[in-house]
Image (cartoon, rainbow, N blue to C red; front, side, top):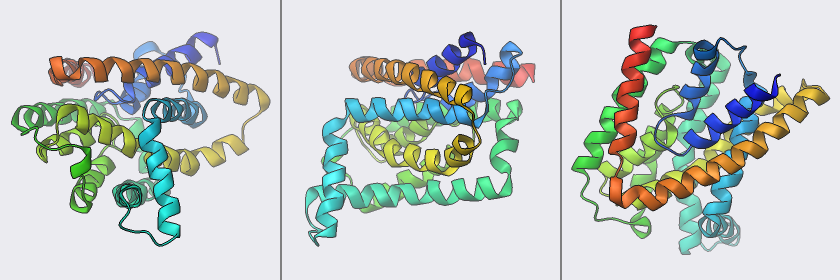
Length: 266
């Protein structure tokens, strides 16, 4: 695949994965918008691996706490704060895992990915939901208030983001804002929940893609993962620094214009 397209895929994925604008929707639209061949599952997975590395690097303490929580669970210390975080992450990941497997087995994953109309409507409607939640949210809760019920509800919202255009981070942030979490805390939870979700999706869809790839394709994937990592780390840093000043309105405005444009064109 041309280097230009590899860089484009990596930059789009890295810049949009954790911004509430839907990275999967942007990647799915890329072949239509620029008359390029579909980059395929392998490069999609490579781009997600890069973004996974970025969120682990930025939220290393939170990710480490969750990993330590797994160890605490194995030793029977269920009331430990780290153990509770691990439990909540597991609960939040179950819905997206179940729906993801169903999508893969039924073939819906590829079918939806190739429908610009669906991407346009989900981009628009979930953008409006994000605006509503951001304006309505009470901003009184933080990470330490996360509980089992919230993890379940946010997990269901995350599962809806398997439809391209929805935005995984956007859906989780929307749920968190409706539940009263502060803007930065909502983003923090969305990022942390992305780790098992992206890891699971990579294992589910990437195993077959990697097994059938040649050395040239694997080299392309490595380039995409590296660039995606750098772009995602920059995007996370940018969003977290500006969040309290700007809220989520700029991302909603972008989603509205993009969604309407897609609907009108396709």
